[in-house]
Amino acid sequence: MSQASQRATVTAALIVKNEEKNLKACLESLASWADEIVLLDSGSSDATEEIARQYTSHFYTKDNWEGFGLQRQAAQAYVNTDYVFWIDADEVVTPELKSSIIEALTTQAPKTAYSVNRKSWVFGRFITHSGWYPDRVTRLYRVDEGGYSDDLVHEKVILKEDVATLPLSGDMTHYTYDNLHHYLVKSASYAKLSADQKQKRGKTTSLSSASLHAFACFVKMYLVKRGFLDGKQGFLLAVLSAHSTFVKYADLWVRQQADRPDSN
Image 1 (cartoon, rainbow, N blue to C red):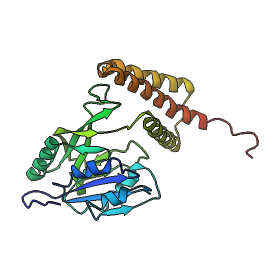
Image 2 (cartoon, rainbow, N blue to C red):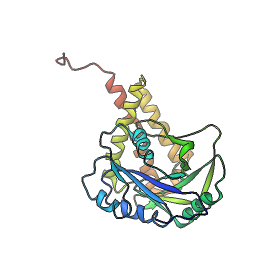
Image 3 (cartoon, helix red, strand yellow):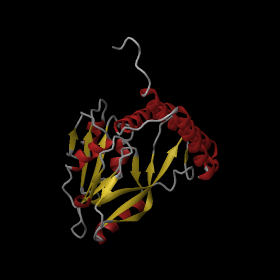
Image 4 (cartoon, one colour):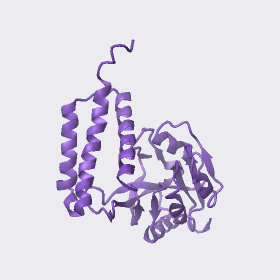
């Protein structure tokens, strides 16, 4: 790992599980500039740990899964540098983004966090519309000025009130789905977590509401966000996203129904 004395130090942090396919490319894009790399694993059964240890000794395990937010909080507890840069195993830092990160660490603007723009490769092409691009997410901040929410899914970075967020230049390439089966499995997992979270917060819904949310999702992605400009992949993503939206609300509705008669 390199460490330039003229700039602030930074740890690239990841939470991982069974990421042997993606991890090497991700870590290669970090190795030349991140002062440390921290990985928190949630119970991998593949070569994730073996690959990770080629790049860092900071590999830890927390397999009592409590949701994405708490997992990220646990990972940040291992960070000992000035800044933390968050990245997922299916993401790769491009050279332009790397230069922008180094510039931010050199400038060290006070009370400032930074967002990155993800560009996703899905089903054979980069998606540049559909509400998927630009896709800005806060990923770089001082360790003592921010952290993740405790949401089960769709966790967010929470910054201190006086911290501003500026955009970094350059994209982060996101290889989000390997194939349709991967999408469906990942989507089902996220839908369940979303329903879990809503149920925990006392939310209820109806099938008509689920249908309306799904229809609105399709219209927004394909028409309002011009998903039709992403070709056949844009249409497929709009349909799949509408389906995923319906499922997460339908799951919550199903939980409101009566138990089977012999359950008592």
